View (cartoon, rainbow, N blue to C red):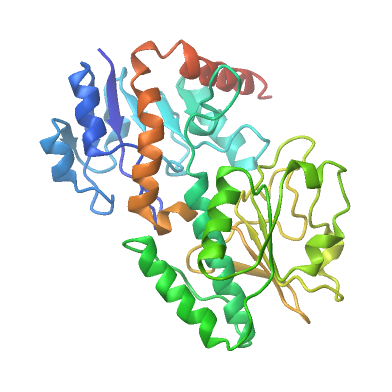
Length: 352
């Protein structure tokens, strides 16, 4: 019998989840066993999962879960070096040469467990089956606009927080933009036809920001892309991957540009394939931007859990996409799960 164990997220400012109480009830109706760790932060109350039929376990107790349990979470595990013996479903960020990802793979190698990376759950044609992209783009554009507004007053973007719903976010941000007394900035979104780019463009349009939308046709020539530097704000909505063009080279920090804010929603600065070469580390909720140049300023926003700014909308959306895939967990060696497992083993076996 398939046993899914939903762990509590250990990362600060992470209130999202990949399955709703209704989703738990559907899995149980199919014959799954579901255990849910208590979490005071998860956007859905623990009691709702209990009413759906889940067994409730203490927060952080997944290391003691039965050997056959499949441990399900979104963001990274505690970096305590513990060997990982279970099968884990999560965003591992381990298959593009990231240093922290190599450490994670070695933990699986030591414990004999398996990583099923949520980013690599795909259909037969290689298309992702579930993604937080839309809300990542939406929130990423919001933080980038906050950074621009702060610059107009000679400051730098202050800490961010979660919102009960997107209307509260829009109202707050509209007031901040209006308070600058300046026209809305000109924005460029690259990857505008994808989930991330669509979310970013929707937020920008809702706030009256003029948007230039680029996708594969506009970037096919491979660069350089001087057009990026003549916009006030640039949102990168494409994933770092082999062959990705460089949109912002290291020399872009020099004066003579209009660009003052980069929102790198794809956010993979430690990958060799990153298309943004002016920064080398992610930013955080406490310090949302990294200032990489002055006169004029250039701030980079690179927060890697942006959808948690809108935890209810993003969780409900993602869980609905993922639910049909979770229903296939009783055939974990087949289909999307089988492909994800094979990808993990390939990268694990390359470790030296």
